[in-house]
Length: 263
Image 1 (cartoon, rainbow, N blue to C red):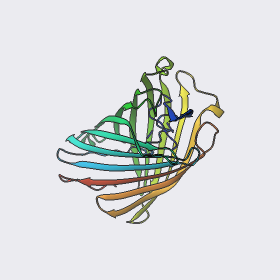
Image 2 (image 1 turned 60 degrees about the vertical axis):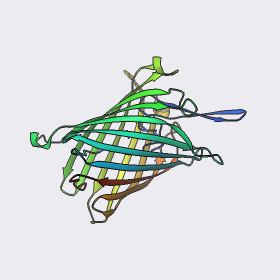
Image 3 (image 1 turned 30 degrees about the horizontal axis):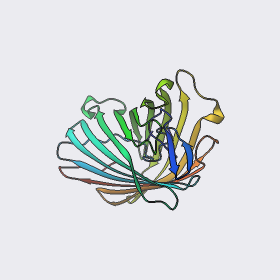
């Protein structure tokens, strides 16, 4: 999906190459909208020095029956700057879990003291993936974050701009995608939400509609304590270009410093 449900890194249409002895099967995905390693709409998340966030992303594609498992650790550097590292893993049906690469993810947020009408930030994801799992083994994705609350309703938008830095997609330039999330604080322990992931194609124009990726993911967040949240959902693709069915799970644990619970 194009930032942060089917899913292959940064709006540069990263193509997952699945190699089985004697057989090469190509699985084409779209960056953020189609990123199988991180099915997640990024929110405004300030972390101060000494504060950490650990995330476990477990995603399963019903089409190619591939499991993607990602471990992510993010540390606060200043009140408005944090740095994350992601370790990527994947498993084909019947095969072992394999390392698929790494990502470095610096985060920058505008201070709330500025009193802007919306909370904003930007995350950059620099990917170093195994050629076994991505034809474009190095890529970059720039993901602005826009967040606004309306009483109990929170809306997050993640437009994304991504391209390949090494591999066959390098000459294809930048791609654009959009991810969005709307959630409602109805209960203390559970927050229902609906997410949207898309990959619109290469700039300056967009791909034909049937070649774009558009996916809707209903789900929600279960809060086990003020610093432990489990998010889950099922993604439903609306075009033939993306996976038609994806299951996602994300466990988030906040620790260290004076971490404040999410909204």
